[in-house]
Amino acid sequence: MSQRYTRREVGRILGVEPSRLQYWERLRLVRPRARWGERFYSFGDLVALRTLKRLTENRIPARRVRRAVKLIEQQFGASPLPLQELRFFDQGGDVLVIPPGAARPFSPLKQQWVFPFDLALLPAKLHEMTGPTPEELFQAALDCEASPETLPQAVESYRQVLDLAPEWVDAHINLGVALYQMGRAEEARAEFLSAVQLDPLNGISRYNLGCVLEEQGELDEAIDHLRRAARALPAHADVHFNLALAYEKRGERRLAREQWILYLRHAPNGPWADQARAHLRRVSARRKRVAPIPFPRKA
Image (cartoon, rainbow, N blue to C red; front, top):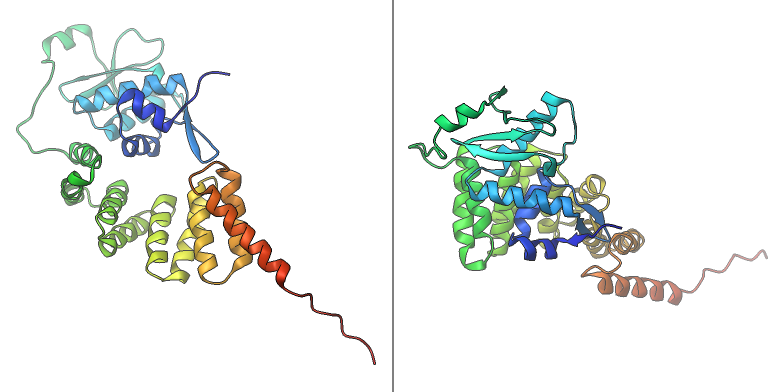
């Protein structure tokens, strides 16, 4: 069996923050295996992630890379096309790709091949006299999420992103998370709600909104959103954990028990596994203490 790496190991090897890895996964630029509530990356994934890191450090936003890959897949009829099988480089802000088996680069955004003499005539990098793009601001915000001290800068960058791209769902989600970490739950709730309204099928936004609502005591709404999140993300262990908490608070022990079991099925060694088992033991003990109702006797 080939070597697999956890998200934490990948972050340590490449020097990439977990939030950035999660964002690249949501863009489907890498597709790690999900098992036991953890993500496992192959060596090929590491190669792809190194490429992504290089491109983003050269101010090529990940969303532009995703758009380029999608166009390459449409052009050459291959889907999904593993990132590690492509050779990328930037030229004047454009993303150039050498597809598998090709001898020269292709510009997916311009839908044309690039000849070697074209590359020699163009400058290595082209800096336009304009403000940062939404993608560049998004990357800057991701960098600021690394420590609590820079969270205010992350919030400001995400707000700038949404000024330029108000329908960017990931920006609403990440802004909500940053606000929540700063203790601004009501503002976080508003951002998660905006994300849900933009994409009702997005399980992450449903999950985040449900968690905030559960903390605020709005259990009926919280359970509705968490149930929708569980349908969208059936293998996401934390969704089942928080749904179990909400059911338990509402006194629905049977439904809570089902969710504790699902959490342990997907994350038997997860960070909340001991707590889930403790909840299950309490439920089982409570059921044993209840005396059976005797059958009525005929006179």
